[in-house]
Image 1 (spheres, rainbow, N blue to C red):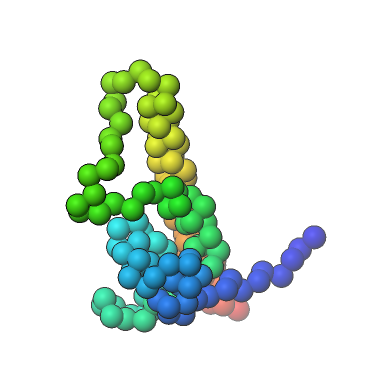
Image 2 (cartoon, rainbow, N blue to C red):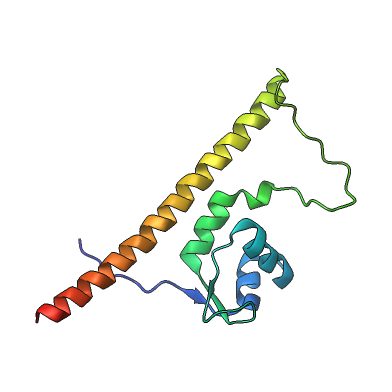
Amino acid sequence: MAQAAEKPQMLNSWKEIASFLDRGVRTVQRWEHELQLPVHRIGKGKRSPVYALVPELKFWVATSGIDSVPQRRAGDKTLTLVKQNSDSPLEVSHRLMAQSLELVRAVAEASVRQQRQAEILRKHLQQMKSRLR
């Protein structure tokens, strides 16, 4: 069954993006900077308008592990690091989970890159078809 391609939902401001993610504006701006939150800019510069596509945000949330990331503060000394050479089952589990998360992120980034490349190719094909007519 061929289904008509639906136009993805778009969020048109930091406030809409923050509301969708149920976070504050500064938090999502920090996530864009530090965690590569998929936000697009219209124009150039830090103060240019932004937009985000809902499917990209949902994919990012699902693959970023953001819900399991502890809030790290400069003065917070309660975070403990897992030693690489420990044989504790809990620590091995933590290491494996971290490695799994990195693999999921790598696959997600590759998927997004491929999707963007496919969009570019589609546009080029349309341009070529219009020249042939």
